[in-house]
Length: 396
Ligand SMILES: Cc1ncc(COP(=O)(O)O)c(C=O)c1O
Image (cartoon, rainbow, N blue to C red):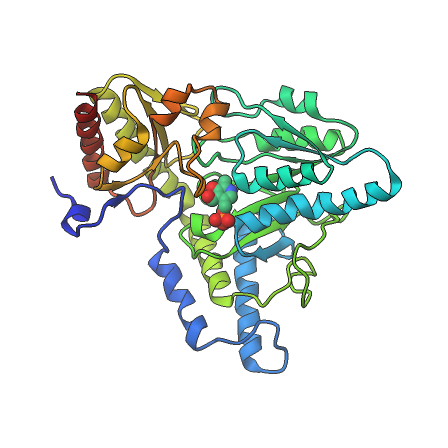
């Protein structure tokens, strides 16, 4: 069987939720902005600044178009972690300060138990600082249920944070429906859409999330840049900047803009908008093929997440009778992620698998496959055979 990856002596990359390879088309448009058009986008007195600023604004339009938002709503950040922090602390921290002066009820935040740590950790910090925080559960598939949201909403709830696609089990949440419930109760909805961009349609032109997080390196763009989309129209969302300085990005994120990264982010979003639908169909077929082959050749498998309401490239499986880390370490020819250490440098068992009710044993025995743009059918067949052989060996 043809296996280009082993021929080159590099593992087959199946960890596209962790990060994606920069698309060569993205790299091509970025390169001139390091050495030719290297102006500061804030310089207003010369051509270098003008060129950089024009390129940033073109990229801003592309990022906005991917999610059907207005260009002015895009605030560039260093990535999704910063965008999530800006949404959550930027809204709640000033309210907490005001509350301390007026001694009224603490502002209330609701987060979903299966969120990424880039949402859970800012929520924890706010709680330490006096905010009321409710963590709502997910069901066995990883979905946030409308009923749990309704039960948790209070008159003083300011913000609810629910991700569109879960980064571990790939479950797609009904965010538009949840946003409507939040709005009925006078709360705003923040959505971490990092794993959804380019894979699941996002349309902010119809009422939905008020704040939305994106990251370039999950859509075949560069690391180190992301965006918070801050809804415009109606009342202005009163966010406070985390970083003060020159007042860039409408006073919300000071600091010289990383023009090459932003240009790459824009191009990655253009490609995702134009090719995302066809690409998702192709990737979903590869994912289904992998799952079919594993199921055909092995027993004792448990699919984590929802069978159909899941993002195209995600397959998360618990293997009875093996340890995920041992399995992963036994498989040097493919790059996947285990259920114990996939979201951080902290090797704690996955809080997401626990939240969907997996036992500790199955949580430790899980692998996340993340199939992406550059994977081929040959690679998927090789990976399936390879995993089957490794599991049989370890079980024996
Ligand atoms: C759902 C989700 N949110 C946030 C992040 C953090 O993104 P960034 O690396 O851009 O800070 C990730 C990355 O793993 C993610 O998957």
